[in-house]
Each structure stands twice: as C-alpha cells, then as structure tokens.
Image (tube, rainbow, N blue to C red):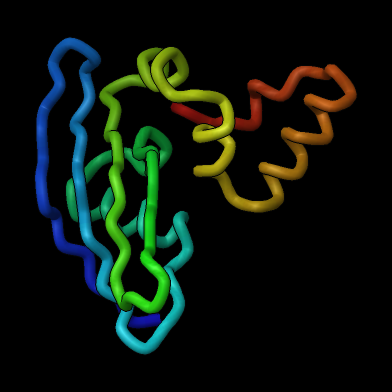
Length: 118
C-alpha cells in the first residue's frame, strides 16, 4: 500500500526523555495504513528502536486521503512504561500479542513479559 509520511512538528522533551512528533500520512486511493507499518517507517526514518516508538494517536477525517498522528519516541523502557497508558502500549503491538495479553489479564496472570521493550 503506497503512502508517504511527512513530519509536521518535532519536539525534544528532556524532562521525560522522549521525542514528540506530529506527522501526516498521505494515503491517496487507499485505506488508512496499519498503525504498526507507520510505526516501523517512522522508527527507520528517525533511526530509533521500534519497540520504544509509540503511536499515541492517528486520526483520519471522513473522506480524506490523509491522517494526522502523534508519536512518542522514548530513550528507555522505564519512562515509556511510566508515562504511556496500558491501552496505548497494547495498541502498539501486533494482533497475536494483543490477544494473548488480554487473555492473560482476564485470567489475572502475568503478561509483562510480552511487551519486549529491550
């Protein structure tokens, strides 16, 4: 699926030790790209660890051929786990891990090992 990513705004947040990026994804004549594909492409553009790259939001207006989103790139996993809500962390994983985490959480078993923030 052909799409392009344009970085609109980039801020370094030294207090939280992360980079906050606002971006635009143009996807003419196609649906909105998968969140994980966008995450991979941004992490390669910024030469960052894809496990520490979190897509915070991705919004497409009805009928538009572009989406506006926000991504946070962390320096370490401890800060990511502290500042990002659980549902956002889970949303940035692939489908198999998401379903496994929700199954384990429902059974009240440990699921922290599935996040892979190394």
